[in-house]
Amino acid sequence: MKKKILGILGGMGPMASAEFLMTIYENRGPVRVEQENPDVILFSLASTADRTAAILGDNDNYLYDTLKGNLVRLQAENVHKIIICCFTSHYFLPRLPAELTQNIVSIVDVTLREIKKIRRPALLLASLGCYEKQVFQASELFKNVSDYVIIPDEKDKAAVHDIIYSDLKVNANKGLACEKLRVLMAKYDTEIFIAGCTEFHMLVRYIQSHRRDWVGSFIDPLLGIALHLEDVLNGRYR
Image 1 (cartoon, helix red, strand yellow):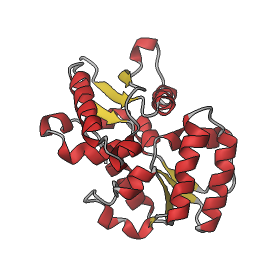
Image 2: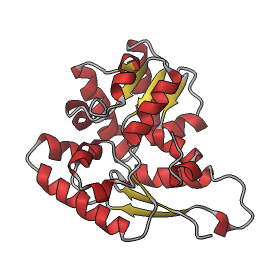
Image 3: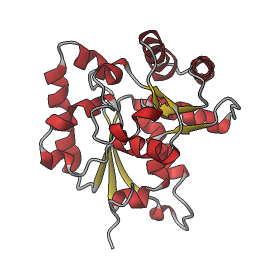
Image 4: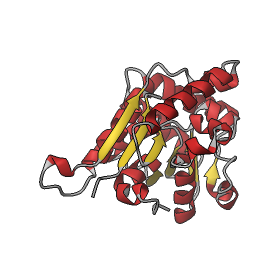
């Protein structure tokens, strides 16, 4: 039987989607030959306009058209499920045609389902665009977990955004990013964070290999998808 193919619309940023691909293959389970690995098509389109700048500025329609066109290209590759490897881009999902969204696995909804499972307060780490446009709150699932989502104040939203752009996106300094995150989590009295920007998937991988005692747990939908890829491809991941 032909294997189902996962499509990743990435490049937003490129290192985050590349690390997601690595996570998939590192958690693929036992294989006898390389042909048993998952089939994945990654569009790493790093030239995609900055999402926060676009939706908070005057470039909204251009970015919408770019995402729409890229999804059409990816679907033409006969992928079975699509992951848009950028939370902020999920702002556009309600505006996209149904034929383009029916195979998209929303990493926002995956995140909110994971929060419902643990039912413990967790600090939401996201871009300013994601915070300001309330991308998580727009999901119907948010109302069930709102009591467990710690949204930082305006100053700390900017601090989180700075971690993404200064410490993770370019010339990543994951050690410094970890230290800044430690301070923020202590301030909000939690040991759990929500990787609400895919750049924080890179930090999750770093924390897994450099144990940090101040992190009790984390919610990272990209890791969850990688660990349950077969269920994701067959529409069973909930």
